Amino acid sequence: MIDLPPEAVQALALSLRVSLTATVLTAPLALALAHLLARGRFRGRDLLAAAIHLPLVLPPVVTGYALLLLFAPSAPLGAALQAMGLPLAFRWTGAALAAGVMALPLMVRPMRLSIEAVDPGLEEAAATLGRSPWAVWRGVTLPLMAPGLLAGVTLGFAKAFGEFGATITFAASIPGETRTLPAAIYAFLQVPGGEASVRGLVAVAVAVSLAAVVLSDVVARRMATRLRDPA
Amino acid sequence: MTLDIAVRLIRGGFELDVDLSLGAGVTALFGPSGAGKTSVARVVAGLDRPARARVALDGRDLSVLPPHRRGIGYVFQEPRLMPHLDVRRNLLFGAPSDDLADIPARLDLLHLLDRKPIHLSGGEAARVSLGRALLRRPRLLICDEPLAALDHRLRDRILPHFEGLRAGGVPVLYITHAMEEVARLADTLVLMRGGRVVRAGPVAALLSDPALAAVIGPRAAGAVLDGRVLSAMGGIARIETGAGVLSLPVDGAVPGGVVRVRIPATDVMLATVRPAGLSAMNVLPVEVAAIHPGEGPGAMLRLRAGKAHLLSRITQASLNRLGLVEGMPAWAIVKATAIARADIGG
Image (cartoon, rainbow over all chains, first blue to last red; front, side, top):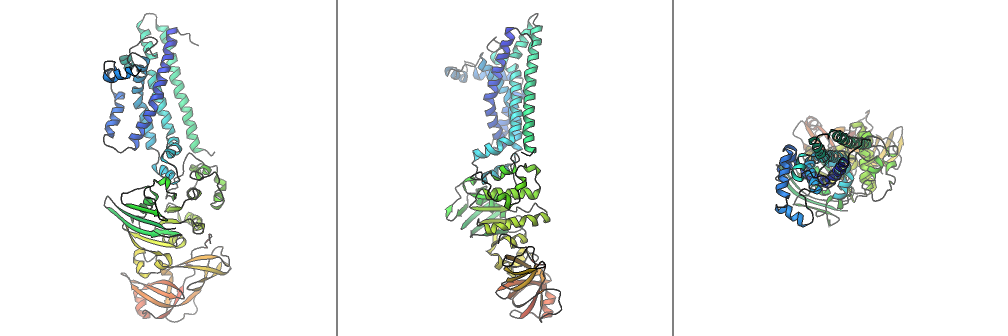
């Protein structure tokens, strides 16, 4: 086991909290948006898709600045949230928001593609077999899109875990509050003699990301076998 | 059971205008592709819900209900099985309980229950699809060309399972463009063309109407007779029909069994005197009831034979040479191959 300085352990714990919170809160939203984009027929659908994908193509620092404009305590939305007991700027919650916004397009895309791949004919058949729309979704759509759902969540988590630019712009890099793993690596690089800590943190970052990808691969393979094999 | 359907819809140049009232038994919606058959079925099932559509089952208005509350089973042209579920769970997908009853045995599925749909052949998948719809205990079953995607040999093997529906008591709306299926399965026939109903009525009456031969095609035209097997020997059964006793080859006929005989118009020849020394086994005394000269070289004749009617298609030249006129007695020579196989549901 690598011996990590307390700041590094703190950064890892914070990063996990931030990225897991971002993933858990963003995934349902991403799922809903993916459905809307895959199946919805409404004006402005392309515009919505573009807006969701914006953080993917914008420089992260621009996204962070946009978040600052919207959610800073001086902005109406930020002030309202603060009054409701949810301060965002320079808090770990803000880091989670930034990570979530950056992860959203990466979650929506595979989910949308997997929903589009589900044959609507199967959903029709399920309806004629007496299943309500909710039961059709639970019994047909969800299991068939599950690999895409999983891919989206994994990608989103990895993105949230590694998010740097938007987070540091919106939430800064306050040790113990918003200094996530990438921010900590950056910070250690700035101080003389920080290399040892950097190497340890990089190893941890690689391990966590790799574990997420391997885990999702294993689950995805199990799902695929479920479709193919008898019993 | 009565099913009332009134649909009016215009969609991209296609106009559907149907007003129908159907009774129990198997009703065939027959017509060429693009006639609007599937559109009608989808409206009945609630899969399409145009503004101007009324669907009522036994007087109860279904139009306001979403498809899952209509109690209507639907067998699609493609099996549409759930790929993530095995055959057993596909069969039970719409069932009110976990009881498979006699469905796997009846549809020859017992050995497939643990398989995933991807490992099923086309015929097996079609049977699972039918079983699934039956286990749902529908008040009405819609079959939308369930055999169209199968090859001829397979169709012959699966058709008997659908014939079983006639005995099952569930009213069936059966969509097809194959006259063979109509003749074997249906009690009532609805002829559709260009989004409209051309004619509707009992199968036997409509198929022996020479005026309709032009609509359903001279090859598809022909009488349908329900008969009872008197005796069976050496693969040849003697069958009592409304037109008289016919000797025909029937697979697995049992004395007393009910069979349906289809005699295509092209398989009925005519003679003015009783022919002798023929290889054909069935020669029936008939009376020419109506003559419909066609547009081509052929003519369609409606013949009264006993209590039933036959159709015969002969050439205009033969018609003139024999000097046949309406009301004249004649002899009909029926080729012995013209038969649908035994009705296993009977």
